[in-house]
Image 1 (tube, rainbow, N blue to C red):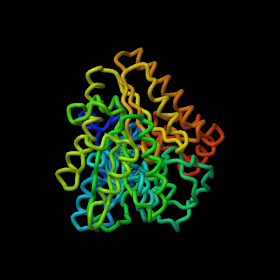
Image 2: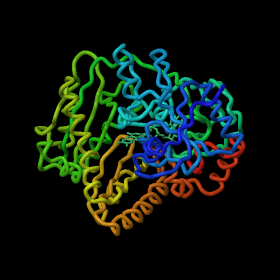
Image 3: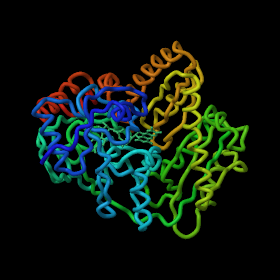
Length: 454
Ligand SMILES: Cc1cc2nc3c(=O)[nH]c(=O)nc-3n(C[C@H](O)[C@H](O)[C@H](O)COP(=O)(O)OP(=O)(O)OC[C@H]3O[C@@H](n4cnc5c(N)ncnc54)[C@H](O)[C@@H]3O)c2cc1C
C-alpha cells in the first residue's frame, strides 16, 4: 500500500501543533490516512526510517499528549465513518457518534465535558471519563474491541481474549478513579485503552451500548456549609453499590463558593457555601420526593434548588455547569498567564482533607468537579508570572499529598508529556523503568508518542 500524501506546508501544519494545554510542538510532515492499510503503510515507513510519529485526533488533550517534538503527525480525522451503531472509525467526533446512537434509542455512557470537541478514538486512547463515570465508570468498560495498527505496522483486531504481544508490567493501581500509567493487564485491548497512542494507532472501535434511559431528572442543590454537603454525599454514596438503594444518581458534581461567585449571574443564591448537581435516570414517576427528603435531612437550602425534568430544564442546567469552565478560560485569557489545574482523585476518607487544602491557594482559584469520585478540579487563576510559579509549586505539594492519601495524580486527563514527573513521583522510578522496557520491546525505534507517559 502506498503512503498517503505527506503534507509539509507550514500553514497547514500550524493547525496541528498545539492542544488545549497551549503547548506548541513542531513537525516535519503530516499524513491524514483514509484507511487502516494507509495507517499501516505510514507506521511501517516511520519504523523503518526511525521517524517519530505522533497520533493526533482533535487535540483537546490538556497534557500535550498529541503534540509532536519533531517527526510526523498522523491525523485520524479521515477515519470517521459510522459502520454500525456499535462500530465507528476512531476519528469520529464523540458527541456526533453519541447523537446518532441516541437517535436510535441506544446509549454510550462516557461523557467527557469535551465530547462535542474530542474523538471517539481519543477518548479510548485516554480512557476518558466524565460526570457519568460515577455510575458507569470510564470509557474502558464500554469498549468491546478495537482495530489497531501496532508499532511494527501489523493490523490486528483486539478484544479481551487477545493476549498482549509483549509482557506487560503489573502493578497495583491506586483504588480510585485513575488515568495514570499503563493498565496492569495481559490482554491487548485493555493495554491499548489509556495508552495515549504510545502502543498502536486505533483505527476502528466497537462499543458496548445500553438502552437509552427513559427519563433523566437533574437538579442543582445549594448547601449552607461544607459539612452539610458532606453529610448529604455520605448518605448518597452509602447506596452506591446497592441496586435497591433509594438514591441512585448517575452523577454528583460539585461547585465551591468561589465557583458560585463566578457564575453568580446565572444562579439565584447568595447564602450558599457550595452546590451539588445531581442527575438521576428513572422510569415512571420522577423520584423527586425521595431526593428532597434527603436534601432536607442535610439542611440544603431547598427553596433555591433548581430542578430540571425536561429537555429545556436539562439544557439550562448544562448551560450553568458549562458556564464555569468558560468563565475560567476567559479569566485566564484576560490575565495572559496559563491556568494551573489539578486532576487528582483520592479515596472517600481523604476528601475532607483535600477540600480543606484546596481552600488555601494564595490567589484567585475555583474548585469544582466530580464529587462522587472525590475527583475535583482546583483551578488556580494566577494574575502574574510569579503567581503562576507559586501555583505550580502549590500544585506539586497537593499532588504529593493526594498520592500519600492513596490517590492519583491524574484521574481522567492522563499523563501526556506534561505530567511525566508527577507519574514518576506517584509510581517510583522502577515502575517507570519497567514501562520503558515495555515500550522498547513494542516499538524498538521509539517512534510512537515519543515522550508521552514515560
Ligand atoms: C474543555 C475540555 C474539557 C475536557 N473534559 C474532559 C473530561 O471531562 N474528561 C476527560 O477524560 N477528559 C477531558 N478533557 C481532555 C480530552 O478532551 C480527552 O482526553 C479526549 O479524550 C481527547 O480526545 P482527542 O480526540 O482530542 O485526542 P487528542 O487530544 O488529539 O489526543 C489525545 C491522546 O490520544 C492519542 N490518540 C488520539 N486518537 C488516537 C487513536 N485513534 N489511536 C491512538 N492514539 C490516539 C493521541 O496520540 C494523544 O496521546 C477535556 C479537555 C478540554 C479541552
